[in-house]
Image (spheres, rainbow, N blue to C red):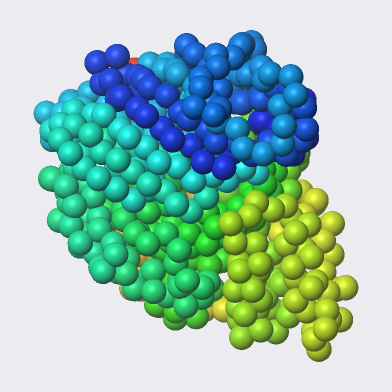
Length: 613
């Protein structure tokens, strides 16, 4: 594939020559054809004299016209679309008149999306909770905005947008923007803070809302909205805590939209409107930390953004770091450290399984010259990145020293897109004239940024909560069913987060004595696993059932895999089943039956996990 652009290997656009300042979307959402039809009017800033063409990213988009708007007149311009590059899309070339000067340039593109646009999911009424109305939503990260809008689909470019959306009048339309005006069948939106294309988002369905705080509501289908309001009742506290840590909240509104089960991620930090998976509805707020993560993105990712996805850790490592601090302030320092230690269990599992054939993707800064961001996506930037930041915090003197630096860094690069070297220089500039300057030379940047595998240094965490789970995992791994049945140790009370971590550590145990039906039954009865509504618990239990090779429970494993298409759960389950010869054919058949209900990013990666691609 090679690098498509100088600034961003995954984008044809040339932000060093021209950049988008504002985009006006005029959309008609056609549920019958499963397409968005309409236009986008881009206001570009031309940065170089005599620019002869504009290059934009598209993917399966049907462009009908391109028009230059200048001085009240409209000038049609030539355009052509290149052949597709797998997992990336196509290049749209717009030819400009000779002698185009630096400065402002307005171009309107009339187009329609494909009915199978990778960034859009169309659900028929039977796939919704209410069963009466269709539902549509987008997921543009990492590089799927190009299937929804012809655009500079790179986080190096940030622009404001407004949108006029025509939709069925009985449905509610929401976007990653503030609602400017509403009338039946038409909603107008405004996003006045510049954002990268991957943060443009839309959802349309039979939706209702409940208040969560002064500038915060939760949206969902009627059947679950009250449960959602209860589950996410701490949102306003999280938002306040994040503001204390990171600085003023600039997006005005913070709403949550609880998505249908086919949403592929835990959450998506769309400004003003975070999308979250319904798998967070555990009934006891035990998985609401994901909301703290998405709130943190309001600063780390949305305000200060990675310039391209090779530096994705600047978005996600910082966000996990801030999320853990929000949790720490609300639940205590021990919980903060336990959360970060639990993350390391997940990272170890990711490196051992998902990335075992691509160790180069376990680096903190990756090379995406020949790899799409979707294929590089893993927990590495999240967990290795946040561990690096915790290491730096400890090195420079702890939270009282490092948190003021964090605020300074976020203020310095607010509204900008940056690379890792920008973070390095911010750290250097902040500490060079202080009594901590000698610590700057102690950081081995190459080791942290370029080495493969687990973090090179594990910070000195409080291990009191993690030791409990470690001992339990050791006990369950090394003892027979008979020995365990008589053990008082296994009956100790543990928290839901300790249970999740313990089950994760058990999956990671190299050898487990007597991993059979009896041991799984004992595990289930000891910890009431069968009655758990917690998706993280059920996910880990299913993986242990697979490891125990209990073929007669294959149906319930597949039932869990079909209950949601969140990639965090689906991909490891399908990977595990692919390694079990007896179950693999059934897994492939099941995937073939349900893949059309998945978003493209999910089905595309599972095809690879199953060895079908």
